Image (cartoon, rainbow, N blue to C red):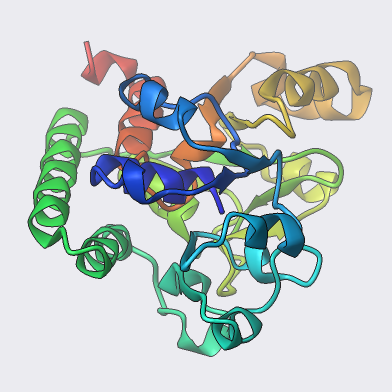
Length: 273
């Protein structure tokens, strides 16, 4: 039900198990283009329950709780009553009190391992986890110690601006890349949060990370910042301190570790020559 879930399946060589996908936010990774092209796309966003049931699934996998809303495929309990099991990323649990106090890369590895266990490919899953850990270690070694972290405004979608709190994968990506979230003081067990422009201007970020998605292009956000006189008060706008990061590198999945490297290399290019 999300591109990040689909990519975990493809990374584990489980494409033949997929009867449908939905909600593709960015172009697929080159190594999965052929496999992705063979999977039926049920909807541009979430399919209706009727469309979802038409492919006769036994199981549904998503990284977003919103897939189980009434206007999407319906509640998990309802699906279970008709014989359809489901996997929802634990950090997206419907009950916030059951979510972890802090999100780390271990939550990513947990997802990979649990999907591997469900589909009987535990060895493949463990190999993928080892590769992800190794990639992160290499990035951290290249980055080294950052004495003065660049302060980041993470601009997810338009007006009012949607950004990230101190909880979730985006916050972890910022930390691992040597940055500091200007809204890290917002504490709640949800990754994304709505703020107002007055607070963004007051906090004066060093860099603005523009998240690029099919439903909210980075260029549209850049043009909004550049064209509104009020936002010209932001030094980052005046100095063109923008970093573009595709949305799929910021939601829980196999791209997050690469997302750390992309952000770190954009913040501190001299360390990644």
